[in-house]
Amino acid sequence: MATNEILRGLMINPERLKDLATEAKEFALQHGVLFRTNETPNSSEDFFPPNGAWPWPSTLDDAVLVTEFRQGIVATYAPFTLFPSPVPKAVFHQALAVQTHFNTLVDKISQDPGFLEEALASTIQADDFTAKLLGIYRQVQHEGRTQSIMMGVNRSDYMLDQREDRTSSLKQIEINTIAAGGFGVADHLPVVHRHILRLAGLLEESQCVPDNNSTAGIVRALAKAWELYGQQKAAIMFLVEDVQFFIYSHRHVDSELWKRGIPVIRRKFEDVLKAGFLDRNKKLFLDGLEVAVVFYRYGYMPNHYKEKTWEARLLMERSLAVKCPDIGTHLAGTKKVQQELARPGVLERFFPDQPQVVEQIRATFAGQYTLDMGPEGDQTVAMGLAKPDEFVLKPQREGGGNNFFGEDIVRMLEEVKGDKRRAAYILMDRIRPKVEHNVLLRRGLPLQLSSVCYEIGVLGAYVRHGGEMVLNEVAGQILRTKSIEHGDGGICSGVSVFDSPLIY
Ligand code: ADP
Ligand code: MG
Image (cartoon, rainbow, N blue to C red; front, side, top):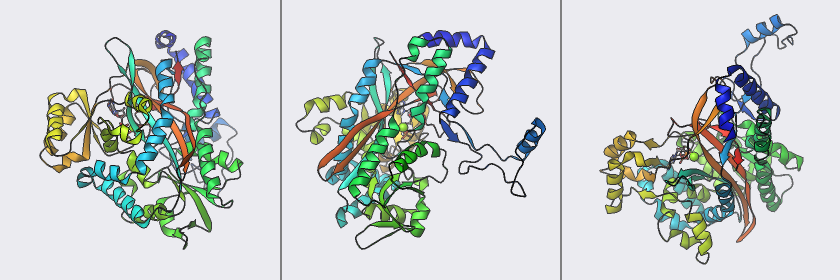
């Protein structure tokens, strides 16, 4: 790859590297590739002068004075790679082509209580969080479903597994049905990457970085769900995090919705707990506003909930508001469900007359193995203990940083192998992606050449009305790249950075 030669050149010319990185960061900031900072994750103000007004610094001395009083900076560039990563055309298109089938699959699972109950039966004995989610699912099922409009935004993540013949095959890492973030910000990165390639003299390569428009796809789905709900004054509510690093990602979507005349509000679980209520028709109201759609940007980890906030989740699930995702769809994205889907014959249950669809989806599955109690689970334990480097041990968690690799697999399996606690996990074949080289740009990180690997995420968005899919789309891609020294990934955990594909 030509970018590798350029990178080698940059390593012996640190001034040139610094210039290019500075240009990339400024371009990123200018184009909305933004992130909140650790110091002020929830604020657009960084200092509070005693008399309420701080003079605008007009000299360097003023600027230094102001800096001394600063508590931090308000925003920075979202972490990203200096160069885009090379992705073979065939696998890129394969990942895009299978996405609408994954949308359909997730949606079908969410409506299949028999399958979910059976798939998660052992997991809920060992994992309290999944048990609580399933408890809400049961309660909502028991009361009878209240809303026939359903929408989903999911992100299916893949790595390219290197075969011995040096070709690569697309393997799914996981599908996120709730923790599907990064949209918006990732739309503006291709412009930055094309610019950097051109600056580096790689004009031809700059034409191989495709546009990305995840914002438009997600906006279309949210707007469709809102429109079907049919109440002009009702709002779309982003259920947001306590710590909002990703606010600018949401803002790309939220401003497009406002442009269409759709009101958007941002609320936390505790706001819903304090002010939310259902009227006798189960319409959800909050601060005098009816909520048409709840877009969960939070609520996928146990530590997102306090004892009381579970009541807020239940309130929203029972309501007439369209949930993105509803509780069944959330459960469809668990690692355990993913492992069950990889069993022979299971996909056929959801696509009985569509062998090509089954084949297309199955081609992306890596080997996954149950750890439920019984002979099959015993075999998995033995496999994991014998060759820990060939597997990843995964609990039912999202957001990065929860998986076990190598010797940690042995330690963990030794601890839980004798009892039902082991059913909280699944074992998965470890994917060995090709090693690339790049410079990771993150605030505070020194400029250096790193050995990296990427993960391709494909976003899907869909809306179902009763039995009919009225919208089912691919909504762009999100590449995330990390240094190979890390087994696990994640943007928020400070390991991965955003990236764009350079298709070849
Ligand atoms: P999470 O829900 O926490 O994001 P993932 O299944 O995506 O969980 O795993 C987190 C990270 O661990 C991934 O982004 C990837 O870097 C790494 N990982 C997960 N599964 C595998 C695998 N089978 N092979 C190699 N790396 C993996
Ligand atoms: Mg993941």
